[in-house]
Amino acid sequence: MAEREAPIFEARDLQKRFGGLQATDNLSLALEQGRVHALIGPNGAGKTTALAQLSGELVPDGGRIRFRGRDITRLDMPGRARLGIARSFQITAIFEAFSVRDNVALAVQARARHHFRMFGRARRDRSLVEPAEAALEQVGLTAVADRRASELAHGQKRQLEIAMALATEPSVLLLDEPMAGMGPAESEVIIALLEGLRSRYAVLLVEHDMGVVFRLADTLSVLVNGGLIASGDPVAVRDDPRVQAAYLGEGG
Image (tube, rainbow, N blue to C red; front, side, top):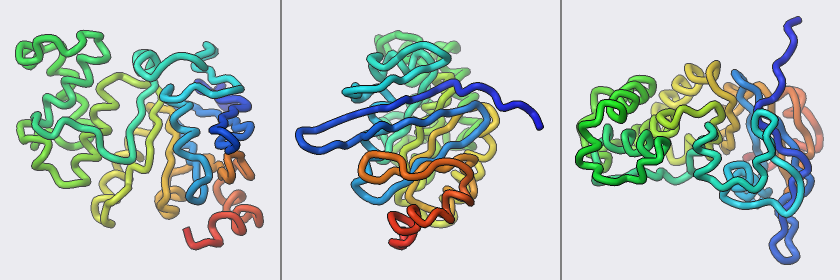
């Protein structure tokens, strides 16, 4: 059996409190290149708070986060993005008035620290446009590159958001419910996209759709009241009585 690679992104014993609420309770997980690690849990389990700490949006009260062996626990979200840690949000975060291509070029520009100066001129900068076009090709949006983002269907907007993340040249993708609000046909497009991308990235997938989770996940972790109750092989985790009682048995 081939030896597994060391994780490139790890969280150890994360803690986060809001007043009397223990939102994150000794959370530990590890992401490996070429593998999808799904994080699930009932509403209020602490998934959003956990993802905020992993992405740099929130600083944990305790514990450590490491990327390629470097301690990044206190590094902010832009700093993590520059290292290669990209997050997508549950609600699409795109510039509706801009073209599809310009949205992705902005993401390239941000990674290059151009600070959005003179974007009209940047639209003609091949060092921004070429990576943007490559990312759009990866997600299947080349044909609509010149359309305004506001004209896209919901599923296409999620594809665009993933293209924006890919344009930052990440090695880690933190995906927050990428199937939110989608119908079956749109979900199939995103599933196929993620299946095609998985070999090149370490992926954390926070997702409510259990069918999607079991199709994509190599590792499954279940969060309840801020702490993990099970983590490992998805089938074994699914069959764990604690998981069935806390989450799957609720019909979620």
